[in-house]
Length: 394
Image 1 (tube, rainbow, N blue to C red):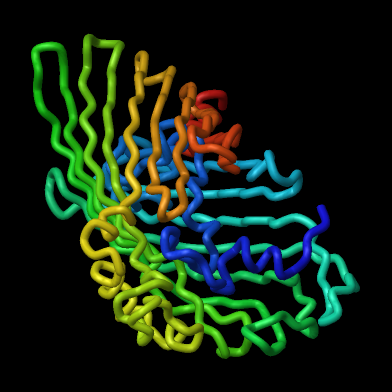
Image 2 (image 1 turned 180 degrees about the vertical axis):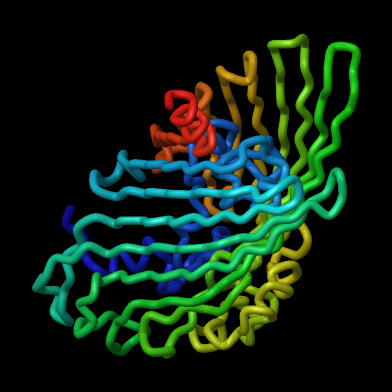
């Protein structure tokens, strides 16, 4: 795949170009961290903060590990990304956990996003080198039950983005000048909460759950030796779910979730230009991360109505038979002004004694949505189930 570096920078949101106010999206570095990495959540409309705990809870709400049934597990997910546009962008996700006892658990994950082959260009627009840009993140989390129904978790994450694959002598346009480009990195943290209460019904035990996650709270990233500082995708996610049994074998879980980026918009009521509400690159770059988190709730030029447009929401249903076979549907909605990502999802999966497999498929409803026909696959293993199987054969 041949693309210019400037096209890639526009795609990843590293430069902020002049745009009509009717479109005021939130732009961050490392937007790959906002992609749903696993097929379980992807089949339910890209939601997972309050759903049933599983091996991939690290991305959505690490506090769920304190309630997971298994003692330990590992899971790998793969997404061939944006296949309608290009053929060599991929997202890989590896996660694992270990539950010490009924109260404590640790978990970790590794996310790798490959952007395929990119053609670097010089100041005259001449291609001189092909590279393979990539982004990755490594995180660890500790979760603990604070009450019979409540758990919390803290996650520490290292984020690294190299958009010219080590070819750091190249230059990129920044405003009207040129500057050297380099890999960017930073640290971030998540704080999450999970509430899960069983409710006894005549046909069995149902579960009500509430999830909350503040993710990617950390420093900014710079690709040009701190000339420009880019926000990372800090996010607030809230959701509820309810799982109800019909009998001893059939269950249905419904979940609703919303999330808001804790990142200020480039068009803002706090901009010095009162007529256009547009920050200069220098003004926007100087906003600190903590200030940006709070400012994101009240900076939209359109007032409260526009702030609500920044909330992306999703709904999902999961049917399970004997907790072994699963069918899922979901819907995700983003306002036209903020990106217009709208799509239905479907998914299926099965779980045996030691292995679990899930798949999901995206069906876009907005015209020319690059997410259309995106698939995700996840394969997980119960490590203690494998250990028990080996021991029984001895």
